[in-house]
Length: 167
Image 1 (cartoon, rainbow, N blue to C red):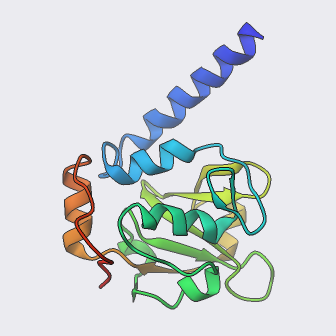
Image 2 (image 1 turned 60 degrees about the vertical axis):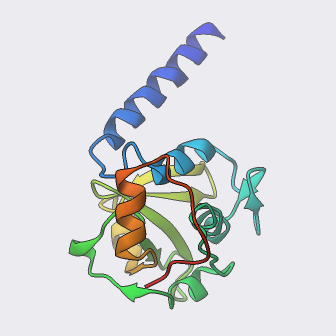
């Protein structure tokens, strides 16, 4: 038991070290993702008891005062389209995992990685360059305005001061 706990803690420390390159590494976005990391996958889940992919992104953006619909397809129509080379932390990234268009969504966290709800791992961080995701990547959307992005990237202690802040 002690060995398993040590291995888990070491793995978490390594994961957090890889996230340190992000502009959001010490930000509210990172805090939100870290607070639910490992939460199990739950079909139609929108709470810390379990999330599906769009339930997870709904939860994350709710912490910033931004309401999103509970559907990856509907979320893919919001905000502004962003080229893969222009991604910044907080952008939504979309995938075709079903063969029928947009079927998975995550939040870009920097360094080519995104946080999402995996059906096998729960809330996790994956690389856009992983063969599974790189083959299924569709698009990205910027939901958070530049002002909100700068606010939360610069000061993780800032609180949301009102309604949605969507470009």
